[in-house]
Image (cartoon, rainbow, N blue to C red; front, top):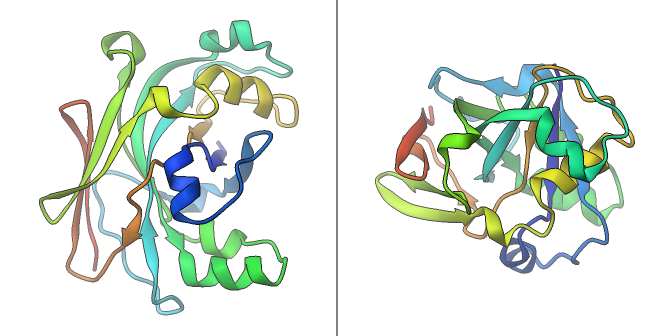
Length: 201
């Protein structure tokens, strides 16, 4: 199982981080050691002072595929979930400024929170989601605002990587990302259904 993530997929988030709008989906990956599930706590690492939450819709790949045409991409996932792409923003900014890869800022242990999954047929269109930080709504997402649709993402990724059963695709975060602190509680909702909670320790 691999975790494939899409960056810069919501215009408002691109603007809040002062990045350029990409010509194609921006892809990075996390190892399976990044997965944090079952509502387990996230332990703040000692090597960063600026960990950010980034709430994202997550696709679970349901069958193997390579060079998938966009018109057939919907056949390769049946479930959608919600997760967090934790980002060590201080490390990322430093590495980006030097023109270096920033995997350590994105792919560290427990950096990929993932909650429950639901049948995509049970979700409305567009899909709405939000994140609560200590009970306050800090991120609101709408799948219609993505630069690249689910099907476009799957088709594009499959040009480079064979998609396999159980692979997870994090589809990008909307605006509203921010810092976490020890003692915080994060709760993610897909429409009005609670998908995960995560305490910061």
